Length: 116
Figure 1: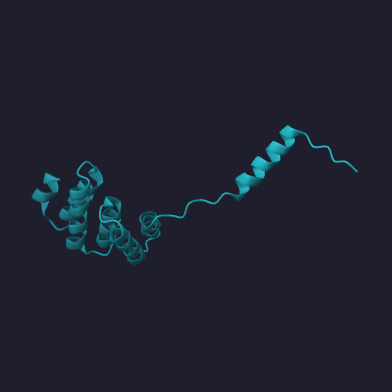
Figure 2: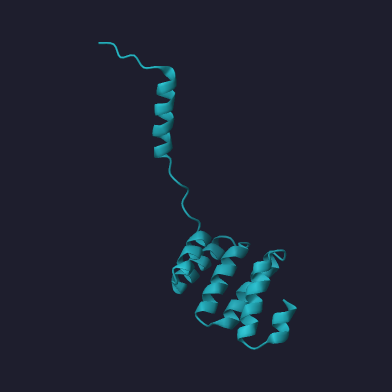
């Protein structure tokens, strides 16, 4: 018994089979910190961020997420340190300035908040 398969059908079948087998890249530590933060898991977000910083001290996003976690835990001075570090790494990213400004406002340091 001979099975006849057309070439276009075979190509389509193989392409669909391979597409289903592809795996996504694993999330980075900074992305895991982001997800933990959005789930209100402040300590976990802080831990993931710290691990990301250990791996790459130039990861400004990790400093932002750890700073956000500090803010959520009302550790504003720690948050300001992390936001300042993020700004030092990437002075063109406005998120570090914005978040540091928000932390200053909560502390009642309006002049510093306006400066950012």
